[in-house]
Length: 420
Ligand SMILES: Cc1cc2nc3c(=O)[nH]c(=O)nc-3n(C[C@H](O)[C@H](O)[C@H](O)COP(=O)(O)O)c2cc1C
Ligand code: SF4
Image 1 (cartoon, protein in one colour):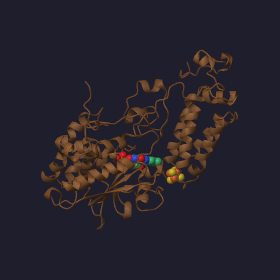
Image 2: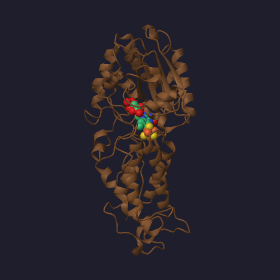
Image 3: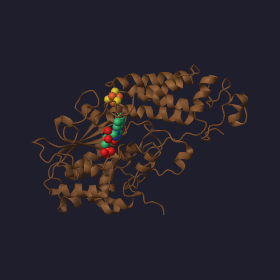
Image 4: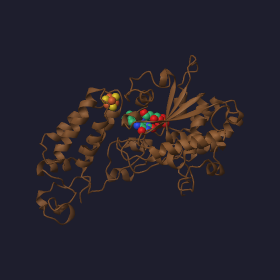
């Protein structure tokens, strides 16, 4: 049976961003249900817990459980909800699509979540480069105020709420929740030492929940159609609800075609393959992609984006990039492959303030583990096994059945069958 579109159901609809089309499609019914139907904030949290919804920002932490970490007695401090719309993962564009095409779906989820958290003011932290997304969101927020879904005494319920859009300056690490909090406070976007966790001490020293765009969109549907419905449309009890999978993503171990073939694209399925669902985005590389170049490209990104607080990450990410660069440029030394592994192994396993360093080493270690022959070929032949093909660098013979590299000069076919 073809799955029913949920989060992307309105993408492509004419004027999908406008509040009148959203209302015509049943929009803000979930908010009305909560605010005029006698739901308490605790009842909303319970419904979200029951739905099994897990955060869609990467870590997959259960959303209702996280909300429950906000202390009952906040000692007079306000509670904040921050929508993480920083989406900077290389190749990941799911949140941008949701924000730009259906902003009210997200806003409705954010207002409902704020009600559950007894939060008066919430923020949307948008990636700096998303000019269009920020404009679409602001227009949608203005419309929501006009219709009485935001502001004082929403729908006559006594609940008041304001949402502010905050544009980042364009740093990947500001997607990490405590880096985001620092940045929102006007400081450098550098992750904080945890504990204390944001639910206890977050933005402006107050209890704070950070949730991803897609997570908040899911909240709208949990309330609108019920936790049981949401739980039922997932793959199993640990992977409930819809999940947007759009090509992209980088901070996880690479998988070969054979590994992905029988792998369920959910939290457990990918963990079983020693990778992770992360942003649930997929970069597909065929056999004409140079794996060393792909790893070098990602290493360059991570080297540029390290915030620099932790020595292994600050020093290790540019090292990885430099060594990968020289291998790709034909200047690699036989010991360089082991050197890459050695550097990477000294950066990971939770020795840094945040998991950025673990993300940075995943593509390097997994590509060496699975495509070591290709690395060796670069070092031995001082060139790439695959394209880009130019007159100076023609297509190799054995790999493609033509060209001017003698088959004897190619490495034996790796067991994973990447090279034909
Ligand atoms: C380096 C790094 C970058 C991250 N970038 C994002 C991001 O762009 N968007 C996002 O929602 N979460 C990102 N996260 C995860 C957040 O720290 C946090 O777990 C998430 O926003 C929580 O929302 P959720 O519970 O709804 O998934 C990142 C984490 C790390 C370590
Ligand atoms: S691991 Fe890297 S990005 Fe994370 S806090 Fe340390 S230096 Fe910054």
